[in-house]
Length: 106
Length: 118
Image (cartoon, rainbow over all chains, first blue to last red; front, side, top):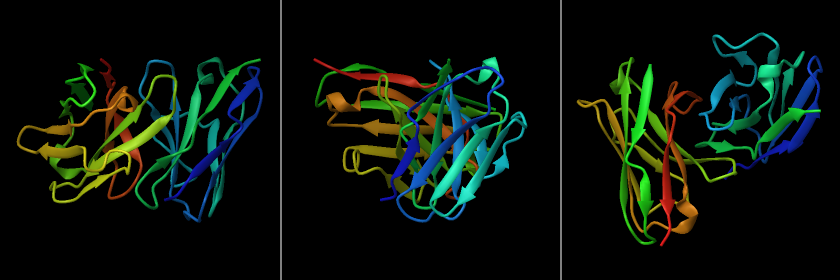
């Protein structure tokens, strides 16, 4: 099974900050990685797929990079609507989610 | 595009429950589908997936042998039959549309809560 590990688990930041979240896979997954945003009481929302492709309708301040085993999600300038929990997901072999990173107000 | 789950509720340990997910706004029969769950205060866990035709089904080890995924393309509906339920199965269950074969989940329902407790 492929395990996904995100860091940090919690991140405190201010509006306007540049934020980076890391996701590591236990084995190479090429670029078969997605990122989701989830707000309390809501379903997850797809942000990035294939490691760096921006889903339609997602603001361009979100970007993804990486391949193999190490990936990052970057928010270039944090906005009030971005305070949420973010999950990575591999889909090279079935599907596995990271444990999540909560972005909270500093 | 809409996915609407139903069938959640309170069930005793060892009991059974069937979840449904009604799809609309897209050609349901052209897409693989999946179930994902989230225990209270916890992260996301993939549970099961099913191919376009229903001939291929896939399960997480945690539910294999207890849960059965199925679909009725004539009714645009996805199902999850859950049996031998345990307290650790307590979660919000989401259905999700899979963009293409073995890929990301591009649309999600709002979820239905399953509580396993005596």
